[in-house]
Length: 166
Image (tube, rainbow, N blue to C red; front, side, top):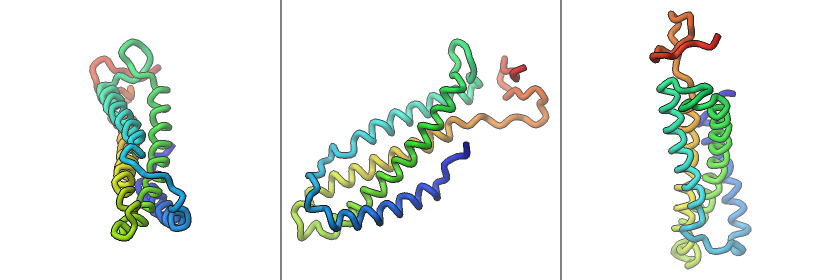
């Protein structure tokens, strides 16, 4: 599984923002009010992924990946990579949506009272979506295994008590 490329995420954000802007042009009159609570669920997921990324990075750095007590199972690391990639893509799509909404709202704040009221909620949602993308990329980066020494035929990472599987 290859790492998620930031340029692919950026292209997704831009394409989604364009589509969102066109949809908002047609459908904004039927939108419910956007509050600052609108995007906060993404912030909670981003925080959880960031904390988990720190934990995984500490375990990988300490060479504590494997089966047994106080070790992180390799399947948990692999699942973390899948969650990180899915979250990065979802975050990019949602960020693009909110950028498209903001592109509609910001120029109309002076003429539409509703647009002025909705801007704060859209900004919070966009920032939370960006936080999700960043946290997901951090989690994905944290799951990388440390480089192995090419001079070491055993495949150990150089940590005390760390040996290659037989």
